[in-house]
Amino acid sequence: MLLSRAATHSRKIIGIKTLKTLGNRVHMDRLNGSARLMIVSDLDSTMVDHDDLDNLSLLRFNALWEAYYRHDSLLVFSTGRSPSSYKRLRNKKPLLTPDITIMSVGTEITYGESMVPDTAWTQYLNQKWNRDIVTEETAKFPELTPQQEEHQRPHKVSFFVEKAKAWEIINVLPKRLEERGLDVKIIYSSGIALDILPQGAGKGQALSYLLKNFKVDGKVPMHTLVCGDSGNDAELYSVPEVYGVMVSNAQEELLQWYTQNAKNNPNIIHATERCAAGIIQAIGNFCLGPNVSPRDIRDFQKCKVDIFRPSHEVVKYYLFYERWRRAEVEKSEQYAQNLKSVFCPLGIFVHPSGGEQPFHQCIDSMAKLYGDMQGHQFRVWVDQISSAQIGSDIWLVKFHKWELSGIELQCYVTTVLMSLKAELPDGFSWVHMHQTWLDGSKAGDQTLWCF
Ligand code: GLC
Ligand code: MG
Image (cartoon, rainbow, N blue to C red; front, side):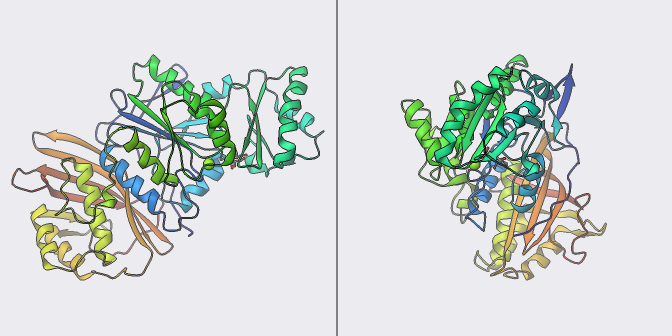
């Protein structure tokens, strides 16, 4: 699947601050208080299952996160990938926008959607580190094959090496570098990749640094869940007071590390589910909050969820929209009627092209599209939902709606006014909606009047 995602630079609206710089430290300021849950997850083979071409477990996680967690929790991606390789993955897979991105095995930290780099962290990593000396000394080991240039970073020198040879190098190399004044850490992952980093770097150290900063701000997350599958994730599970999940498909070296170092820690589990499904499983296992993804609910009429939040309303609507167009719900007139009771009769939809139509007319157009995407690759997900109560019973809600149709990916920046109505079964009524095509993405279909 090849998608093209435009650069996203729009700042969050609705009174939620995103980032603030104090001294030379960037502060994560989207939430006013401590996060209820902070998930720190690896990407390849943890959040992203490269064997799941439909990305279903990732989409299940996305729906769960946006409906129930985005408003008061933090999502952190922690990957071995360099910034360019991370961006490539984002263009290929339906990944949500994280609050914090840790890249290059804990050597690069950025904040927010605009990915503001943490320069204090980079400076700290300069201690007892000299990249030139590392390349000079490693050149003496012919069994080390340098990885491509893209994966070589200021504080990360990376190679490929066979398992049998790796242990010998891990034993010998740090001493040689120490004699030259350096203090390094060597990490072996997926039975093939060997990374050399400053001693203070790594995914675990980067997380400890974030937690230390949250402590200074008086905002330590109530719970932290770390998620991984390979050697470079092992450090994450040693950070004090975190819950941890090794997904079912975890690599041998991580499971071995666990057996030798953490077997008696009840806060770490080896999930029976793969990748993102294993993360959802861990949320349930440790009772960290809601653990049923809205994507797993086939019929919201029959299976009532007792959570009244605008975000849940939005996620539910777009699941219905996807299922309607894929013909995965029954074709019944009742659905259009139900929608009309939830979308205010006087409500207006402002189309990205600038035109306007009453909601109910749009619902009639959508009814005609039943099954038009049956048998096609068609998926819809929402990202970065934020909402603010702006009156006694009125909310302003903003989110990015992503629609994947074949290889075409389209993003709509959507703003909705919702009001709380006691007489409605799920509480919310959609009052007004405005969509724009995401800056940088090409104009979508100008004739399609559904939202
Ligand atoms: C990612 C990086 C690679 C690194 C590996 C293990 O695949 O691209 O450079 O060696 O993770 O940390
Ligand atoms: Mg991984």
